[in-house]
Length: 239
Image (cartoon, rainbow, N blue to C red; front, top):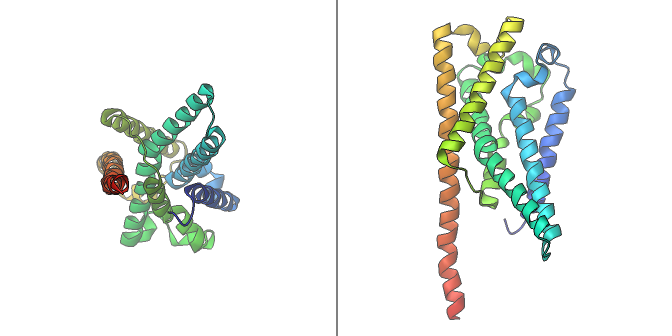
């Protein structure tokens, strides 16, 4: 991390997401022209979440640089609000949803790509864009977690928010099917109503597991960092 300032990394990641979003929206796919457009797909929603999150990270970095050395208490309060928003988004949206999209997409893709990413899409989406939507999300979010310590909300509050998001998206998918008669994901066409309910419950459980994973990973990284730095600080004081 010392070779590249974290502010530069965040700005580069933000530009990467903006580029992927622009290229994706420029594709004239039939699914984009139907009810709900791109907003039917969790992949697109996740890209927007990641772009907004890294946008807040960049804004926080700029605010931190501008307020450095300043005694203006109002600016300090605004900076703390930005940091709190950044940490909240990381905990309940950017990490669990980002990891979910990557893991579920590639698991289903390797099992049977027609269930999640039909071969027809290769005519519209180039491989680099596919990886920009479904692969690079993982290293980017891990880089951010390693770059800065994020204050997680209470376990109950975080899980409640994740469940609220999951329920909202599931209801949205069901509503799109109600309006169009077509399921957003081909996988849902092949399972009965009871299996769909189980599938949606499993999805919600997995999202919550990823939330807890993010919480644990964040604590592990920064507790290890603290343990590593303390002996060095003691040695420097002795010297």
